Amino acid sequence: MPRLALATLVFLFTACSDDPATSTGDASGTGPGASTSSAASTTDDLAPTSTTPGTTGAPAPTSTSDPGTSDPGTSDPGTTDPDTSDTDSPLTSTTAPDTTGPDATTDATPDTTGPTPDPICLDPPACADVEPTATEHQLELLDGCAFALAPSDFAAGIARADALLARTGTAVTLDDVLGQLNREAVPGLSAYQAERMKNHDYVGFRWNAGDGAVDYWYPQGITGSSDARADHKVGGKRLLLVSWYHKIEREPTDPPARGVRLSLVDISDLDSIHYRHLLLVTPTGDGPDVNFAAANTKSGDALHAGGIAWVGDRLYVASTSAGFRVYDMSRIFETTASDDEAAIGIAGGKVQAHGYRYAVPEIGRYNLTADSCPLRFSAVALDRSADPPVLVTAEYMTDLTGRLARWPIDLDSTRLVENGGTVFALDAALAGQTRTQGAVTYEGVYYMSCSSQAQQWGRLYRNLPDSTSEITAWPDGPEDLYVERDLKLIWTAAEHPDKRVTLGIPMQGY
Image (cartoon, rainbow, N blue to C red; front, side):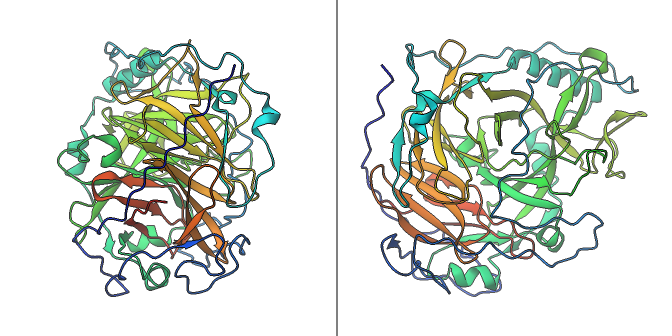
């Protein structure tokens, strides 16, 4: 028999006061607190403009900013992710060209998987059974046994990453990088986004002028130190990570995109926020020929990186049509040259990463198995409150067919929990919402970040299985979700040029 769905949790929790450090910026002060409304009401929650809930608003307008680049991107929240047709290949050894540079290897760090539970999913459902007709604003549980992932050889991936660090000779720690944050954010929200969020005790910031306007890097995923550590801090600091994908128009013969960059943001003091970008990279080759490339798909386009989750020292990155790529935040290395933004890898005695000083290597992947029902990985978030803890993934669809899935993870090994070498979803659900850009569960409540719900504005939906969504105002262009557990804040990053904010508001139960 298929595994029974988990019993619905009905634990309720109340909104918590915001962090004492108030947000500042174009709009002064914050609102008196969060007010919400049911999806059955006729007005959006505290929106400057509103439509009848359940109708899908027009997509957010394309940015007209032009920071002077030759490869502008476009904003189109109403389409599927650009790497939809790309399926990740298994992470295997490839031959890298002969290059100069340090030549050394180190022993691979032993890797362990999490505890193996009793066999489950002996009779997975037919795929048609997990594609039922959805009802708007209704969250319907599905059998997670329909969805399965297979891990790559993580021991080999770690050995390759260690060989890369040995060859570069430039391994650094996360503390080293935190001591070199070279960009300053602007506290508070723009007046445009603050008006939308005016009755919420929000905290947040804007990127510096260049990052706020750039139209070929788009922020997507968000996670932080409260995911990474049980005590909510890494190195004693309150941190965020935000993923950006390189959004350019490419012809098949064009050079590959620059993949994914990762912003490391210190929000310990919300009045003085500093950050730095690092590049995610994929090691290639083995032994003395080990090298690295940007985080792209087989087509040469950037991995969309629509969601990220920081678990221990590992960073899980959503790979839209495949599953997850996993990067190691304890194996960061420094480049030796940053003057050539087109250069990537070890060549000519230089270590270069598209102009970035630091790079984070991939160590493994989880890809959908051949027997799994199809599923898109548009976003991912960690729920430490669940038993067992889970990674929550969401499908972005313009209609109501988008699904959520929860994948069991062992926090000690930082690996997904396998059964006979396969990872089955613990459970799944029809979201009952359109354009889901991010999702997370926390203490039994489902949260969904959806774009273009009331004209250009997003909404944050809250729901329980077999219940009706409640809604909260959300910014223009919202993406992935992150729960900062100790402060009971839920965060997102807005993606559109000149409208970019990263914000958190007090969580509300259902």
